[in-house]
Image (tube, rainbow, N blue to C red):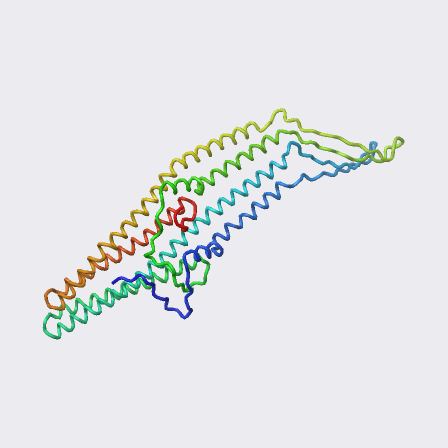
Length: 400
């Protein structure tokens, strides 16, 4: 009989209970890749500080043989047309684009954490299953040994029984190593010490909830990462175009200073000057046209993404339903039938009515059915992770 209870790790440290939600929260707080991605915020903030800067003044000192002999001047460029404000708006919009990218990466980490959590649950269930298979093989070997000693079967059946024990033992040892690998992958995602044991609260057999495809599609339109990124890219492009238009306004150069030593007229004489750049030939026409073209490209990509979004959500939804259907078929039909045949074949062998090969074949059928059932459960959780990332929002809270 297959049990999905996870055996406790064979380590000295007492395992802590870990729910899926706790694992997701730990990954959100501690995952190193996500932490590195969040550092891009500092780059965005620095971009805002750069955009906020005011042009520096220029100081000029002159010394001439002609009069006035010396002069000291301050030249201060003054931006007109709201250029500084538009630069800051571009920087803010680019910062929001960075936030969208971080959010997208966070969803990817969430998917990987969910997959790692249930891969560990699968590995432990598989180890538990193969431990039971090993016990059945050892019991079958004992039965064949007793029947051989009673003269009811040839020694060949004893050897066959020993072969099955060796095979089951090898599979169990491999599964135990794969369980360690799965634990290591989960701890790496959570940024926990390698080998940290966990008692998983969610069982592999706990299938994800059901959803309405129409509701999922509507939610995807609002929260899908690709659509969010394209929408923010359009806002960035619009703010850049506004800056390009603002740069058409001329800048002023204000010059204030003093001339010195111009005898006999004066010793100190103030002077000032205003310079202005006239946007006569270059008015950013090409750059603005390029920006408009870029925005049209983004609009086309957004429209194409929206049109294909329903198909991608539906594909992920149907993939989840297929895995859930597989699990139900195995749970209700395949597994009970295979186990019944196994019991009947073992009883028949005990009674001397069938050969050992019949029992071995029945046990293999059970192993294949149990393995298929566990793979179906893991496939359902994997499909749910894909669906959740495609929609772009957590789906753990029940029906949307």
